[in-house]
Image (cartoon, rainbow over all chains, first blue to last red; front, side):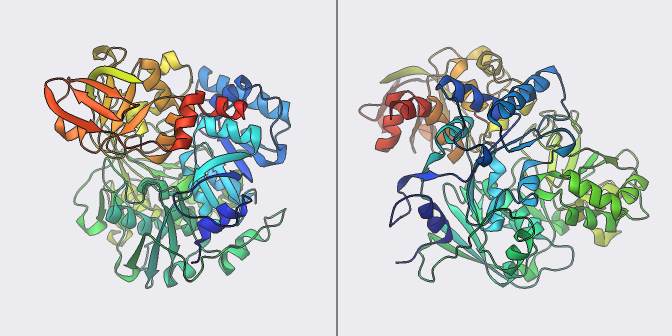
Length: 419
Length: 161
């Protein structure tokens, strides 16, 4: 009986010869990630356990991206705690200030996470790196403390759901729409404790940016990880970035799946997740008249240069509707710079957008784009829970960059085809 | 162990933003977090509940963010344990790792009203409810997780090893 890519990567990080879903294992970690919200608790736990040295300073990543630029004194204190720890332990992948980007955009971009890796992060969207053919999963702060101390962590081997996606994506329809549609189909716990493996001819031709958006939202279906079989597109993305060896794993032909779900992407329209669950998904044609107060383009889901290019294409020579706050958040400094070089920032500024520094702030209702009572935002982010972006009586509508840009112009949730 | 307290019911997909909104994540002080426990699900919750009380949830309790502030807020507020139909996986591991007792029961949620007195016997895996004859079973906990609880959480478990 064969194994899935998820099982193979997990097994390769143990001394086991066999592995099966449901099994509890201890596995070695290639990268352990924390941010300014989650790392302070991990550091407290690490010290309380008598931790003197991180297991490997080259395998720890600490990224101050959530409440930065520091939003208040407490946030500054949290960042200070993490910075002092990073300096004390000589943590190699420490990012702040002008070097910081949204962690899940930054780590792949820098080649810090690679195919075949086992990555844990005290941030639920750590599953993003599955796009590279890595096993990557979100954990808590105590898990991060344990991994920083021992270089290992406990895992329950997940069963895998295989998605076989075929057909050419229609115009404007992206990986974001695919994953929203999938979450809409299976629900926010449709893949609970399981791996989501994305395969099929649509996936084989899908650019890395779209794969990253899809893997990013595996957690919104409750999954432990989302994963893509590495291929030529992976190779092209990774090779110029990697500074250490990496390995491609693929699922065996006779690997066992808990479910196989077939999806025809050629019929997919642009998708919008209505409040207050990422599974509350409608096609854009069914969205109705939803007036918006804000459009947020950015985040670990859709803050990459490819997303900004789509938004700019739509916003060129247009303006955000009166009273709509358009906020663009390039996810990393490199993306910011590239957007500047390509003239995208001019297009955004001419459209009356605010260009935010790279930060997670607005997406999680921290700062840099908070909603008042009764306000609505369309957002290219990943969560639309009650109070996610501000007041508990505000609303978030999740979509891809094409819908977010078109909606900003029209002041209501809209397709670019309506412009 | 025996857990005894009043049941506070929350529905399906209670996310960690509802358990502890991000606007309070500029601290990890358990006492501060406890003040806002469940705030976006029920703003009055912390004023109504008493130490020892039990949260009874539906499906996928604790979904969303990995923030350990969520189980920390619940524990520091004085909730003795959480019983749900199912738990989101990061919340599940966080609870065991940091020492908030959680239990799965498929039937309890739909069978009781809020405010019932619940007694949960974790050794025998049984829940009894005031004025209800029926007993409810809880799903067995894997031996490894039992060990984590016995050792007092993940870090103490590691220290012991």
